[in-house]
Image (cartoon, rainbow, N blue to C red; front, side, top):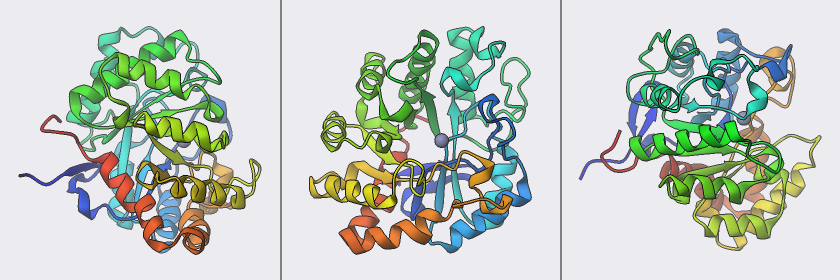
Amino acid sequence: MSETKIRTVLGDIDAALLGRTDAHEHVFLSSPMLTGDEFQDVDKAILELRMVKQSGIDALVDLTTIGLGRKPAALAAVSRDTGVHIVAATGYHRDAHYRADHWIYTATRDQLLDAVITDIQTGMDASDWATPFRETTSARAGIIKAGASYQRITGTEQLRLEVCAEAAVRTGVPLAVHTEVGTAADSILDVVESVGLPASRVLLAHLDRNPDADLHEQLIQRGATLVYDTVGRIKYRPDSQLLDLCAELVERGHASHLTLGTDVGRRGMLKAYGGGPGMDVLGRSFVPRLQQLIGADCVSTLLVDTPRRFLSIEGARQ
Ligand SMILES: [Zn+2]
């Protein structure tokens, strides 16, 4: 029997080697929604990831999608330099992140699907523009990301969500979906199941913005995995509330479907740019507090076992 593999930007690795994982991160990002707050500097990314490594985190899931400044070749360089495993994303974010004249709105379903599958099987597009001006790098994507709006999935988001779910079925890599303030999660699972992707292959992001333990339990009972990814985002609520929510879900027996991330999405949140709390806030500050609350073994389930299971490429397909 072959080992379970996880696809990183430096190649496929034995899943057992992934280590402690921040399951929602952005090494580089540039979006029309974040004008003036983009981060694209390679040296600063190396500085930030060195701090992440020092905080005890071994791997990041980079959920920057097509068209939002992924910089695939630089991701590989940053991973090589810092020793942090990076699982990079392909796929498409929610409508708000693309200008009205972006090619994703005029591309056919087959073109959208082809760009995602090529990113996974051959290598990510360097220009981030994809078809037809593709410049393929050697760094392959190991996860797909889609996105939905607040309380609803627009028509164009649904098309791209279906495409992303179909690509997950065909390639065996998992699907992460951005929820806006933790809403519309059940509708998202309905759409992905309608194209044949089981909820067990879906990671729902930002559910902690909607800190409703009963809802989270229902989504997990449908098979989904959740990432609580607003660690250190004090403007939303104090970390103490997020710690209590983690403890509640673990108490209910759901540690194997729960994982953690910081989702640094703005330049002003990065120490390398003079901001805060820094991408290392998870390992440096949150993890020690969570260990006090639920014990080191449970934290290890959230940081190591859940990401390892979820990120593993399914079956022989790839
Ligand atoms: Zn994000």
